[in-house]
Image 1 (tube, rainbow, N blue to C red):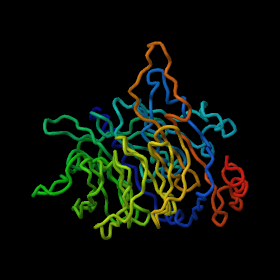
Image 2 (tube, rainbow, N blue to C red):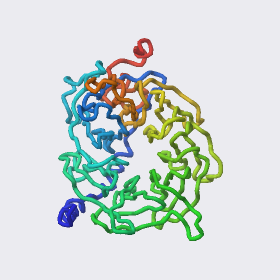
Image 3 (cartoon, rainbow, N blue to C red):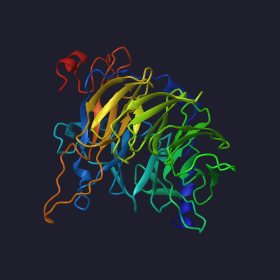
Image 4 (cartoon, helix red, strand yellow):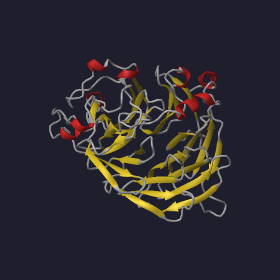
Length: 431
């Protein structure tokens, strides 16, 4: 990207500012529905065909994340492509034309398709993204041999770039990225270092922080995952392929402590809603570990998932109320755990392939799953078509039943699920 393009992006990006406090207070007044995990969820929307292109018939998903305002879903796939799916009730395809019963047909087409030049390492939404403010509708991505890109989620145009250079003045790619809670900085993970970019100043200006201390103590390896405490405590966690997780202060990047115990390289880290606990998961490691960041001495408990044999990054997520964690695995199952006790609550079959991403909707009783894995086998006949079933390499959106004691999403008494059936009907006819 040229310097002129960077300057133009700077002019567009400088208006990314957090909302006023009254808007935040209004959001805090909202009462989230309590999801009923004892009732099997219903598949509301499904996407499969648009991922299997002629050029990439074996294309698989790498994850899916809801936008902060809940209006759309962002997916990443092996074909170096990011897709945005807008929910029908938020201006997407007409819900009457959306089909979810046939797994071989897509419910509707992606509203936006952005193609990167190389493999996508990581992606994230701007934390104050709102469909009512087009300026805030952006997401960031980092790809192999490329700088960090910030994309317009409405038009698909490249807003701006953030470039880091190595010792020989060549662009080096970040392996993980995350906006800080204030939304004014991008933290990016590299090999044994973290670079911090000012959102308002695109280009090659950044602060660099080594994860190794002067006495060579600290966090080694590639920084593969970054997460911030949601309670604005100024803490962030970084996972490394060296099987460690480090806790830092955001303001000066002071290393507070390092957590050891993951069997594989850490691929995903996530704070609890109250910021007191940290959940970490690694590749070729069947356990998600729960740490108390106030003590950080021993593991509080471990949550099992089927991921012993894969190097894939498997995203997990905590529901809006902060009571349950959902995670996929190689067996195609989504497991739901009670975070108070660490006990398994329920599970359901989300795909017939590895479920590498699971994301709760920020306020509706919904969740999204993504599935697929890299296949190395090819058809014996060069002319043979490579067919995958509709429940492989797919994205599904699930609707959960919810407790009628909380606010009803449909404006009623909250006693009906997203498909219009009551809890009693769903329990009698879970299919």
